[in-house]
Amino acid sequence: MQIENYQLYKHAWISTSDPSLEQRLLPADCHQLLQRGGWLVRNVYNFDSKEPTDFWYVIKDKFGGIEEIPSKYRNNVRKALSYYNIRRCSKEYLVQNAYKVYVAAAESYKIKTKIMTLSQFQAVLQHQGPQWQYWMAEDSQTHQIAAFSMNKVNDVSCNYSVLKAIPSHMKEHSVYYGLIFEMNRYYLQECGLQYVNDGARSVSNHSDIQGFLMSKFRFRKA
Image (cartoon, rainbow, N blue to C red; front, side, top):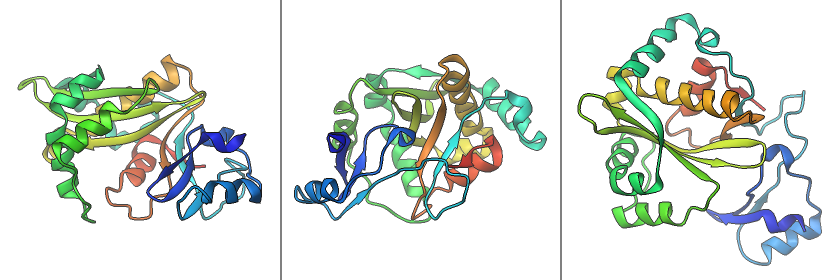
């Protein structure tokens, strides 16, 4: 049954599969999910339609190297790649080191959200399964973590699910430019996935990351 791929997240039933592979649910399917709880069912179908709609994912399905980045931002990428050690890391590394980055990022958002405690943050990481992969950007001088990403890899795509950076590193050394560039290269070029995405349309747009990805890295609405 299709509904076996749905999980409850913030009172909404959301598919855990690639959005491009999700199919239209029958009303009976939605009713069955809502009988288990929740307020609504989010069902994506006709993915990447030619006609614009009021709902979208922000995706990137091609990697063109540094040449595809607008010329005025290429130095930001080069600066970040020279300043930081950017690589995949273990879950255990983030459990021990990433909380301070998460707090610094959350405190800088325009729309304030409830910040998890250290134990809650670590519990989220510990409960993530084998589909999850982790990246970090480490200051090459101080060897301190400056940014991280928690990515969920599905059958044909990778979701940049949690992407956080210490604000000062974003301003001074463009840490996101290097981290995102390297992840795009890895998943699209090296792994050959069909696309990477930063999730669906944001209601709060608290971090403006989706606008950043579209203007700097050629992400687009699907």
